[in-house]
Picture 1 (cartoon, rainbow over the protein chains, first blue to last red):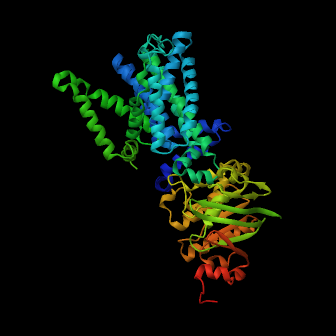
Picture 2 (tube, one colour):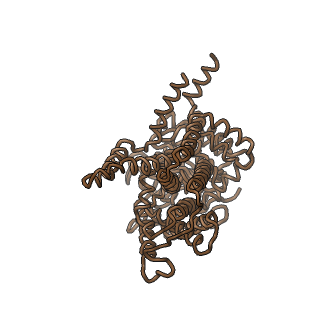
Picture 3 (tube, each protein chain N blue to C red):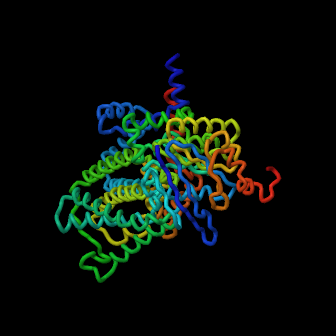
Length: 365
Length: 246
């Protein structure tokens, strides 16, 4: 009986919240308390969110192993890559409040640099990817400094202008010898002969990226980011150098977008200037909006729904006949509109709540 | 002891309007000073100028012997001069505890909180301002009085030497006012220099030993509340020329 009461109290008063706020406490002292971390990780696995996450990861691992279908693996790989990209946008826009419509800049720079290093210098793909991400960080600095004076929609337009500048630069015929013009970089050596190996490389990179992003968001620096998002003037009045932290956000976000871009180039083995188009920036925005803004994990849900469910589920319909050619796009666009209309906070939060109720019901709580 | 804040010939113009006109005063360390004036006298502009949110057209501000005119707000905060806002500015979607933590994460706040640990330090501030039982709530759901206390807690998180409180009593019930009263008094007793504005004289009368009065951007009186309240120019400013109450 006492046990039951305690559980009830912890559920109603601070059950889920306690855990949610519990992570920053733990991660703030990350370096000092690694044993404690392991312990809290073990505890986390058995919480609702932890078990769900582990379940999802296991599912993602099992699908390609069971089906062994190249097509499914390809779809899953792009889903993983775009979820990193979406999460990097979420860090910048959802957590720091700096809405960027030019996130394709980081993605494209990461893709080009990684592709170039693998193809021209013959470097190992992993190091090329890291170099690409580092260059994307520098570009983030380059974009961030002039754009930081802009706010709200003007910042969005300013960043979009950067992506258009880069698009035209990489398209230009005069610079064909250096930047490759419309052809971009093609025939980039593959990451591995084995399709499934590539999938696992990318899965591991994606999981590590998400762990790092989650830690950043829940650490002190994440608190400062959120403060800047909520009220920049008040953050300034609290003694926070907002310019510095906004630049840091641009750089971190640029790094992960660069990693996503690098993986994209390495996986598709080709890259062309279209990666700089606003389309790629909007992929990230749509995925985050679907999953839920300011929830790093929402990006995965959003990327999954957008890339796997909406994009692929209705594709077979297109083969029925010429009339049906555009049906998949039409239906997925309609569903997208309906989802965003009725879940303005994203799908993750309400879905988690309902799942949690179900979970509690299963455990007989 | 000594002068902690020295404002000299401060002038700020907004287009054709001179909001602050050749304004000078001094505040001693540990003092508890009020700044009064009718609505639109320029009190908030003086605060904005001192805390660096606006740049003066002319004049200088010295804090602790150092010229801080033209420094950025966060730099001034990290020197130990912190202000609160008349319209409460909190981080709406973060917990109350995190609101205070942000201030404790500024370079100056970090120095102060390092020994105790961030969370302990922030919760100590929260219990001082009386919000510890609401530490996990987001400020959006708090009543106005609590937000005012949070505002002071946020300022206290940066470990200030001087605290500029902009109308901390506006829009509060008597009970809430009494809470803030006690809180400010406690801060003052701890050695924090306090500079506080208000447009209602009575609020400040019982609280501060010294009052500076301003009207239409100009300095008009300085002294004890009794002196200032009976000052001819102050009466004129509040009641108009030829006021009936002598």
